[in-house]
Each structure stands twice: as structure tokens, then as C-alpha cells.
Image (cartoon, rainbow, N blue to C red; front, side, top):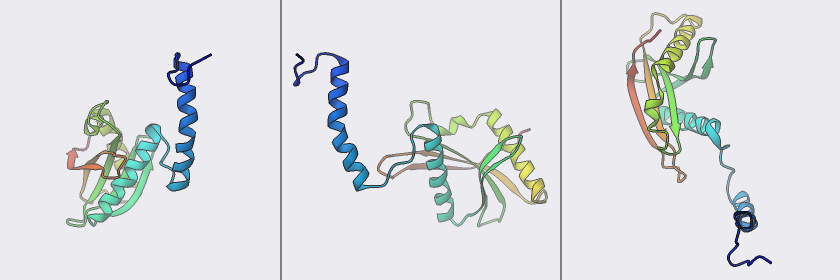
Length: 160
């Protein structure tokens, strides 16, 4: 018979942990909203929401989100409140630094994809003659909601 005070196998420890955690799981679901789905997709969606709110709070007008085309995609397309230029924004969010800082995830390949999508969007909207730039918003997500946000203006030039 297994000792309940100190389980001898990892399986027994896991089962015991699972039973004790069910109380907390029920408590959390009753107390607050469900957090966004885990994994990269949930992190990305939360990061884009945080970035959009960050830009709106600074006077930017969001024109489109998650524009996709054959060549690539742009997370946020906005208008700068100061000089009225178009801003194509790549959002990179992380929950930790085990994969490095989010800014470094915007590789030259990713820059080319964003550039292709930006050119497609400009053509589709007949705005080739407008000033535009590429920004990166890097976010370290924290469970307390106090996220670290780094807005890098003119992060890269048109790449194709």
C-alpha cells in the first residue's frame, strides 16, 4: 500500500497533485475569466490585443488587423497620429525569455513577408503614394497584467 504522505512513484505523485488541484481549478473558473488559450496561438492573440490597445492609447488609429495575403501577413495596420503616415506593425509576444527576446524573432525572412503583405495592402487600397514605415512591438506578457512593451519605430526598411 502506498504512503499518502510521501508518494513513492512519479505516477502516484501526479495523481495526488491532480486531485488536490481540482479544487483550485474549480475555484479559478468561478472567480475570474478564463485566460486565453495556451501555446503560441494564445500568446500571439493576447499580444496582438495588448499591442492594439497600446497603440490606441497613444492616438494611433487601427485601420486593419491580421491582414493576410499570398506573400505574407501584417498583424496591425495603423495611422500615426503625428505625421499621419501608415504604420505596418509586427507584434511579437513571449511569456518568458527561454527563446530569447521577442524583438529578435523578426528575422529578415519575416521582414520580407511583412513587406510583401504591406505592398499588397497598399496596392489594394490605392495608397502607394502615402508615407509608410515598419514598426515592431515586442511584448513580455506577465500574469499580473503588467506587460513589458517595447515599441520600435522604423524597425526595418522595405525588404523584398
